[in-house]
Length: 140
Image (cartoon, rainbow, N blue to C red; front, side, top):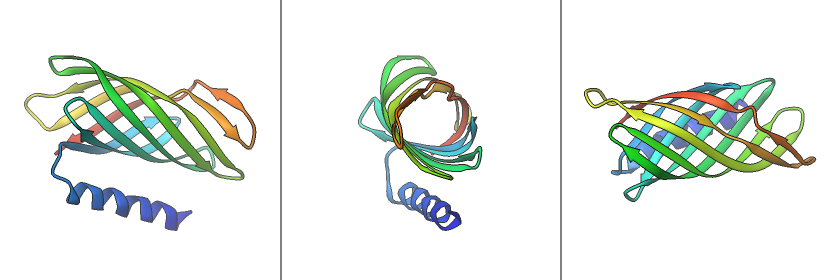
């Protein structure tokens, strides 16, 4: 598990250094904690990749988000997502992400509130709606 987390952190660092498009990295707190990386894809879409920990499990998630309504420094976004949890069992799920971000105009900082509902597929089916989170990211 520690090796996997180390590989994920290295991957985040490589992606951040290799790209010239706007991006953000930081932490998301909700059900446990997550290291969160966002990478802009085009004018209003972005990829978000999260590596997290909590409740005796490690998690990896990715979402492809579409900016729905940018209003000044605020942005509403939504998109499909996939998640993997590794603990006592391997759990796979698909879902979505719905959120609101605020970009500070004077400092390179972004704050977000989001919701990540998920349908688990493996080892059994189920629905989780509890994943609300607060993110703080450095924009570079």
